[in-house]
Image 1 (tube, rainbow, N blue to C red):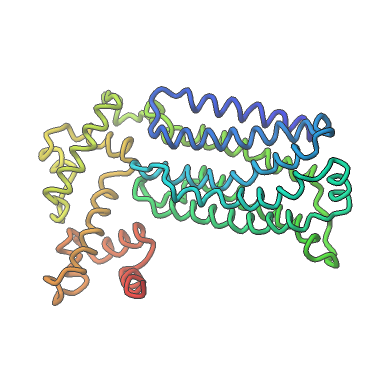
Image 2 (tube, rainbow, N blue to C red):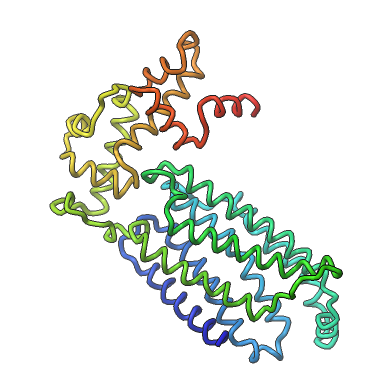
Amino acid sequence: MVKGLLIFGAIQGLVFSLGLLSIKTPKSLIANRLFSLLILTVSLFLAISSQRVYFADYPKFFLASYGLIYLYCPLYCLFTESLVDHNFRLQKKHLLYLLPLFCFSLALIRFMVMSQAEFMITMQSGQYRDLSLSDLVSIFMNIYFVWKSWNIMRKSKDVSGPFAKEWAFSFLSITLFISNLVWLYGLLPDFFPGINLPRVQFDMVYPVMSFLVFAFGYILIAKAEYFSVQAVVQNARYRNVNLDLETLKTVEQKIVEVIETDKPYKKADFSLTDLSELIGIDKFKLSYTISNTMHTNFTSLTNQYRVEEFIRLVKSNGFANYSTLGIAAEAGFNSKSTFYKAFKEIKGQTPKEFFEQARVA
């Protein structure tokens, strides 16, 4: 049964990965490629795990295949970064994301140079404390990557409301977090031999890992609009709006240019109609672009700019005699409640907490 579940998960993951790469109008090509690589990595590990009996003559290869597990959380973190940052590019600093795999690879060298007989004796006698230690280090690093991904989504300005409340992504984050806890639980007897805990059987760990594939499928179905322009939900409001990807990007550039140059959001009564008149584009097309290309809504977009303007004004010398609410009004906020709510949603802190942290830093 376990073998069948692993094979099914591997095949399903391969289909998901190829399907994701075949999208002709991706919202973010690099995000799609990273997510496809993540799915493919999980699928490959499941495929190898399902055929353990055929690798009995190659135990070192089977052990080395566990390196794939160390890529799950780093790839997920890179994916979330690329999803919310339209200018995301892979850089040298991202090599640090490979540290879990690097730790495992260092511990693996000793086993790779052993003879087959020596390798089997070492594994059967449980003399692999260094591997367990690399596992432990990697688990905590993975938990950090999951936490970082959660915060990237929660603080993202590219969606309407906190991204972390998107259940599809929360579901995957929680699944990855739990899988690492199960992994950690399985390591405890290696470090605390006297501890009286039921031993985790790896035949039970594999199905937990295969469950990730179903989580991937859930995201692809529930949040298809994050992967394909053509998958954007066409509600009644936008039935007569027909814009291709190139036009959407052009409209987005005009929106950003007008807002950043003219700063119309500083008027408390600034509306979508006002923006439409400034740009000379129908407001329904503007609303469509803001929703489906910029992944937010007009109110959240203007509040984002107002919050950044508020921070800029506070740091400038010309508003030293203004109260907090006075500066907020200069930035375009028309009420105390709106200002505090917007600031907390965008920055994850109150204005006071934000500036206290800034001073400490």
